[in-house]
Amino acid sequence: MAGKQRTTKRRLRGGRVLLLIAIAWGIYLAVLIVRIHLAGQCDEVARAEVHADVIIILGAAQANGVPRPVLRGRLYHGINLYQQGHARYLLFSGGSKPGDRYSEAETGRRYALQHGVPDDAILVEPASRTTMQSLQACAQIMRAHGLHRAILVSDPFHTFRLRRMARDIGLDALASPTPDSAIQSHWMQLRYELREVGVYSLYRLFGI
Image (cartoon, rainbow, N blue to C red; front, side):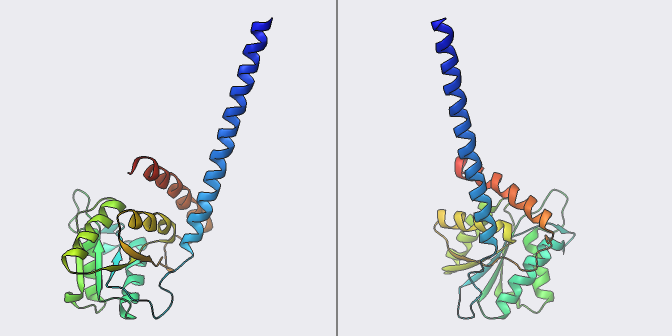
């Protein structure tokens, strides 16, 4: 009888520990999704007097050199910031998938030229496949051109992770999430924010 009581107590203690872990994990996820959402609402370049050396536009899907809606929203916002005088250069980042004729970066370059940006104000990073690869490669390009401060342009859901990664690699950067994102419905925004919770957690745990 005493043995059964001890076993029962151990099971109860184990159940309480698991419950506490589940509660703590739930609180972590809830706080993280709130932080991701709030970061996407904060434009650090909203004031006219904010200036940097380069505007980095993170890549997204394109089709045969034509930006799809998500990338087009990023390009429009980044080029608008450039035309407002927030930086001297635009740096387009993003590689290509097998079979693509153009990289995401080259698609951005073509779009910028079509919208009046001079070629000598454009830099490209056409090889990266992940956010961290993009930031690391862009940081190298900035060092090679003597550039020190960047403005990061991407969708709101991406902003929180971008800021953290930039800080982790020592990149002096401000974030300006695009207000013209193709991801407009509340359900789509929530879907991407939930995805970011997982991606960000993996990054913090494993650096990927």
